[in-house]
Image (tube, rainbow, N blue to C red; front, side):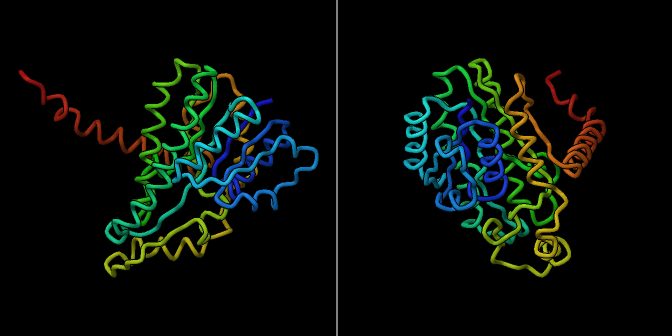
Length: 279
């Protein structure tokens, strides 16, 4: 039996992962700011002894540390950590204020760091474990207009994940970055998606369209979160999991387009780049 720790477990991908982990016979420490919502949404028939809920705001180091300690006390170990808690932000880069940007990074970047730093001593002692970090297709591909600040937070997660893999893989710890496309979760709801307070008319045809589109396509996305959660659970069971797990045909297409664009830029600037060394 593996022991999972999942943040942002009261809805979206986090909630579905908790359900599938329990159905598969594993134990899970489900963390959320309002853990009572987890109990309301998860059928624990036959699995109550394998579910532990914890009140965790990932920006609160004391709460995170307490949850990790309680998890080890109850189950003796932690095998898979899913850094799922996060928020969205839509607005042109110029529209999103400094305060709005910092608030987003507190959850999407520093929250991931807080959880990761809290669990790594446990995983290092075990010489085993798997860190799964929820990124986005916009964390590797080109973020669309209006998604710049959100994409920047996920680009940061990508960099952290890549470095972490180099640091912890010799200790028997795996790292996987999950890069979903658009899925029919509550990501576009007000509970998960913030919108910049400022509106600049010059961006009406770019980020302004993104604002309107986010509302219009909410709950109509093609991605199935149940299938996405199953893919994440499956990867956690592999002996040699990949560094990256794109989810959705849109994610694959966006990442392929980004790779082609980077390759084209490299070809166009290769002579300039290689001519900058001392003679």
